[in-house]
Length: 316
Image 1 (cartoon, rainbow, N blue to C red):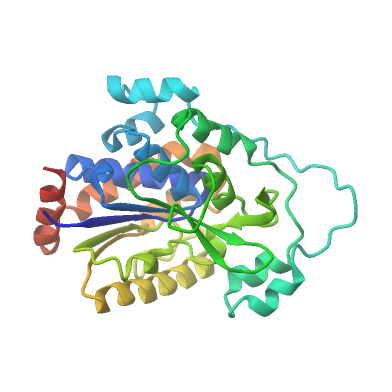
Image 2: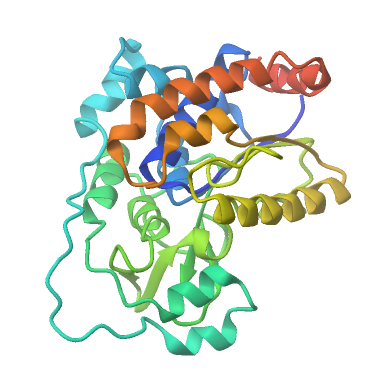
């Protein structure tokens, strides 16, 4: 049986909706992402990955987003939380003049634009507690799932990438997802064990390079923040290009290590559906519908046949 890794990247509310479409299409094609040897999640992808590890069937992700009927298994899991979290995005009053969140981190940024931005941007004021609480409801008294789940965040003071779920890290899964989702300048950093954490996308929108030495046969990467080549649309065209180039570097590292890679990135139609604001909940349904259609089309590509066989074998 092939060993499969699944990487779910950042992208806010619309990114989670994109994941729903792609993962449901993969499930229709015979691959259940819950069967992955390891799930790597960043920001929006962290919440989706944690939901999968809690047992939610990926075949139901798109129907759930689209308010369509879901399976009894999925409904039981939704019943634990009452549905996706709703975050009040209204800015909070400031208790003092804004100042950079972590000026010293600039020196430790390694030239990564995301880390420089996080260091110099004033600390966000909106709480992510509702995200952590919903994940905690999913897991109950279980601190971490038995199957490998890696949740990526960044230590705001040291600038280091932190991978919760790997040896040497210690945080409940709800705290890890909350930390990974704390977009700099928008959400408050998450404090745990005396450290401050922010969105793992500050280091990389996917963090796919973590699997380069994992000895996997295939890695499937779902990257909502990048774009297909030539697919530049109205939504953050410059940023999407930067993210696509960073993803290409990580994919090359995986392939140089002998790992097959399949990537799913937004097409021009996906980018148009997603819009300019990654936190725009009104884009959720259109994004999922378009991603589902795009992924279904991609999965008919004969060039993917051999790799799809590996996916189906892993789920059998």
